[in-house]
Amino acid sequence: RPLRPINLVFLLLGLAAFQWWIWTLVSSSSSSLLCPVENDSHPLNNNKPRDICFVTCIFGKDIQEVDQPANVEWYSKNWCNVQFLLVTNLPTLSSPGWDKRIFSSTSNDNYIVESRQAKFLAWKVLPGVAEQCQAVVYFDGYLKPKIRHRFWELSTTTTLTKFQTIVRQVQNHPWGLSQVKQKYFNGLSMTTILNNLVRDRKDTVEHVNATITWLKRQDDYEEVMTYYLNKYFGESVCVQCACI
Image 1: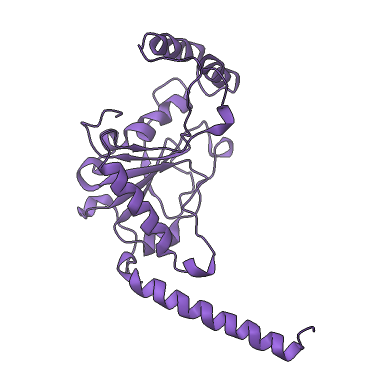
Image 2 (image 1 turned 90 degrees about the vertical axis):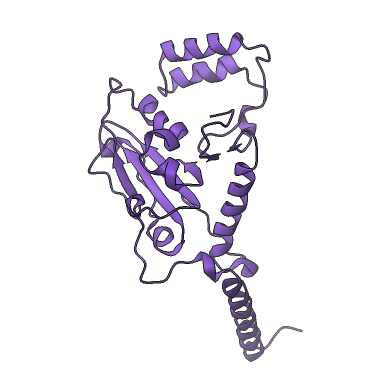
């Protein structure tokens, strides 16, 4: 038979109490991952080592034409031993929670190409990263770490723990890289995908042709292969890693 209103109220209160109990268990077991409330964001120039440096790159002609950075203030203040670095050529770009690094554009307004240096070589071109960051997690500027809202993962440290687990796996892998497969491109040829970059104004004809020429010289080149996402990935800060 249907629940009476008073019984429904007690049921909801019971569920809320259970969720609070689960939250206290999870948060107490991982409280060491959270920084004290009074902590502010931690610039790399204080020589404090970081487990993870989150990096994003946003380059463009003006701030109206580019992605707006996600707000990461809560993460930068509450997650210990991490740093959020925004690399851009736009000094006035909003950067809530990010440590903004300004790079002067030198590639004749080819901003996509310009952004690739810090995206793929953060440990090499950003001062302090190689010395103080154990690993780099890159994601496009409009993204931020995802907080799960399942009742058994009420503590936001769960998300950080998962990042730390992935970072340890990256550090122990000979390639020092972690990516997600791009299933959308399944079955497409490499030539088609690269030429689409020119169509979408994400690269130049010269760069794409040079890339295709280089790829076809490789002994293991295949026109159709497995593709991976580059809008987020993890890399070890490791100059001897094969893929970097």
